[in-house]
Image (cartoon, rainbow, N blue to C red; front, side):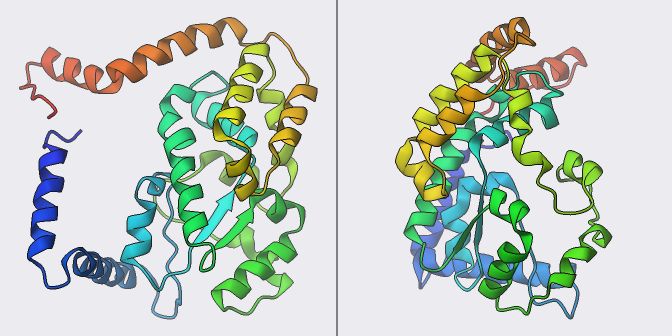
Length: 274
């Protein structure tokens, strides 16, 4: 965990940019030069594109677009209900854990929709559900946007692709070796009690019909699907307890407190975060 003062650092970088010939534009240009040199070393010599993705890029999406003005940007949208269910099953083992992902579900989505609207003419937006329902058509559209030749045979080699490193989705890599539409309806088995349904209903209203429409979804249809999904009582007591804990977790920033307590317990020096 960083102990430097972010506000002061940001102020110092702005001061630096004001001394440069092109100010902030030159700063981002040179950051792009550095990043490209690293990507070239990490990638293969015959490669035309280096794919770089992580969910938390949503916090700096505009800065990324400014840093790589000639890059190709693909916005992959997914049914918000499926995203919520995926977060619960992948990182919570089925138990309520959304308080850990508020910045992704709210600020992240807002940033991505705003950036997509602003740069709509130069980026590609595609739905996850369209990829798994008609992968040939979706991949053809993606390849066309990238200026690459596409053939349906390429889909059969997906299972042969291997990525190094420890990051990524542990669920998808284990369960699927080909493009599958089995995951599109899995959310119904996860968002299956009144507490979860109520939270999701409020979340869909918080996103708003306009943002959902930008992503390619209809708010009314999602709410109807949520209402028709089977309802049970599994996890309901646990969910209530964990939702209340989530309030404390977000307000008091529990991970930082836990880390400081650990350092203090082992008689290490504890520094303030400022």
